[in-house]
Image (cartoon, rainbow, N blue to C red; front, side, top):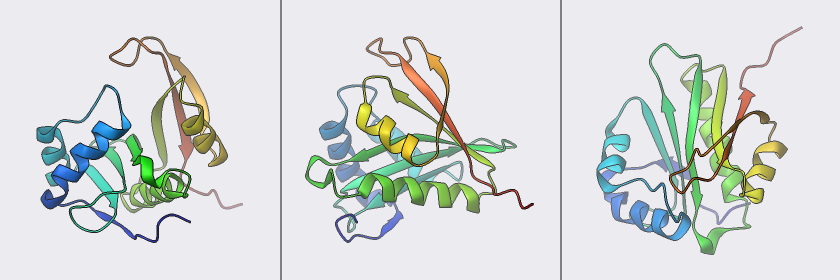
Amino acid sequence: MHAGNSIRRATPADLDALLALEEATFAGDRISRAQWRRHIASDRAAVLVAGPPGKVHGAAVVFYRRNARHARLYSIAVGPHARGTGLGGALLAAAEADARAHDRAAMTLEVRIDNPSAIALYERRGYLRVKRLPRFYEDGADGWRYAKPLTTVMP
């Protein structure tokens, strides 16, 4: 399992740590300080973090559109020091639980086609590849859209 931290909602005290995590994790398409602040305060987003206040080992961002039946996993980031500990999977599970609590029937996400570790995680967790997204990322890289139902249909 991951580094023994519970996953919690981010607070404004986590802003610097979230920015540092983005810097350490992504070369582009980063979330800005203003965007983090908005997402943390928004009732249309969930920013979930692992680590004590002000020290973030990993984060997940989920967006909720009004009247939509699905949630969108916008981002999962795990700091270099916490990779390989299961934290990404724990954040994904927490994001799915949050989406279920928001009464969403499915989760969608986009992932770079050149990110095999993230693709493997999503596929292991039951996400299905839906569509190729040409030039989806700011550097021109293609992405894949994945989706997973979050509800169980009873027989």
